[in-house]
Image (cartoon, rainbow, N blue to C red):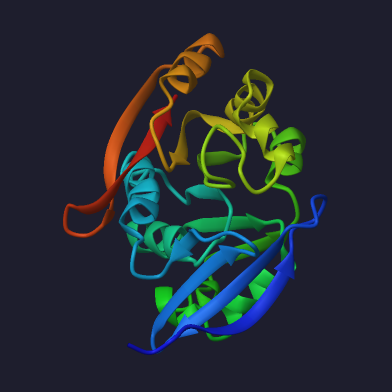
Length: 224
């Protein structure tokens, strides 16, 4: 079997943690330097797809829907959102690490079909949390996949996104009929209760990391 080659590195702002982009033939992997596990793999994106489709199917009938995605990753959530929405949609993806955007415009983009090239796609290089605090009543759907889930792994500052204050800010950034969706690598029943304490109805959906119906079980929360 061919070995992975290192094709890019990036530093996460505020923490100094290094991300490493690796490629083996048409397979890509993103890891944290010094860690044995993967953050992402281009062959395991079923739950990232589900993050988009579960939310976007609820707003598909909205005229000119606007969607905000927190975290670009390998581009699969963006690609799935664009695939689920019509020509009049606008999808903004906020990515904290500039190199991740460049990777998706370069070799990594082939994994998800270069969704950043879609004219409906917009990119905000910066913290999605800042956008949430600055916007009111703008988005029909907000999809958040900025870390490993409610307990931050790559960046402690991400914890705010999953706090009651962060949830309330995200809810305020929605249109009246809008939907929130959160991705997590694992179960976190306390997060369901946190969503409800913020005054939202919430549903936790278990999805698989790999299609069809294979791989680790991840969780998508839908809240409204």
